[in-house]
Amino acid sequence: MGSRSTSSPTALPCNISNSCGGLNNNGTNNFSSSLFGAGLNKHSSINEVMQQCNLIGSVALWFGIKVFVLITSLPANAGLFWLLMSCKTALSAFEVLSLNLSILDVFYCVCLPVDIYTAHHYNVSQQMFSAGDALSTLNLFSCPVLLTCMCLERFLAAAFPAVNMLGKPKNRGAVCGLVWILTLVVMLLGYYQGVLSMALFLALNVSVYFLITLLCLVGIMLVLCGSEPGECVEQKKTALKNILSLLVPSLVVYSPLVALPSFLSTWQPEKQNLDVNRMQCLILQLLLVLPNFSLLIGPLFYMSRLRKLLPCGRKGDEDEPAD
Image (cartoon, rainbow, N blue to C red; front, side, top):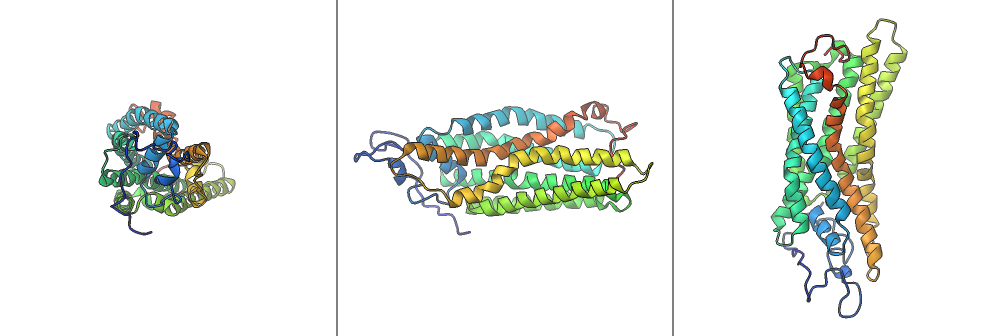
């Protein structure tokens, strides 16, 4: 990954001298001389790309999804954070990881207005574009890492409750601390390199998450098959349901990220065909924006358990495996 150039010009607003994706004096598509003129620049920031797509009238879907995610995810994750923090009993390892996920999601939601602003305004500095890419890593990297830890915790608590290392508070703190350190490192990479140049790395990260989650799923199923009556079968079934509740929505929202490197490698802007460029922009926007729906995974997971969490008591709660 090479260093991102800081001298690249910022896109200009449309005016008489700058047709911004329309037709130039020769009657050809001016989009070919924009950011994508010689092929998609992998060191360009996401919001620079969104600006160029905006110039050819292909940003409505991206903008709509961002706004929808903001107005739904922020209160949902803030409520989940309050719900977990208001409990007077000690949080389980799974709940500690969920708490960190909600903090991460709230922080990302708070920064979303900046992301939306930089994609729709042209008097934005290169530093603002770089900051937008750095913040995008919260959703594209850190959320899958925390979801992986949550699935591993469910598997260990169900299959090996006696040796579950995450059951110890010190180990929980160490795991969460490591996740936040990795988050900071990847944010710095996103700032200096750009998310598009990290597409392959992000796709591999999500693929590893899917692989680990599937292995946890298979592992719990094998444990259930070999369980004798009375061996906490219900707790193991609950752990299986928990992993499925995390895996299914994750597959839906993060699968596009796995396809992102392949799409970037085949990006071929058309000099004469504006409709083709608009379609390519639409596909790229979908690949980049669908992972934003992962901000709802945590709140949706806890909605089914809201009645049990509201009193913040663990009495009679047989769904949680012992840590």
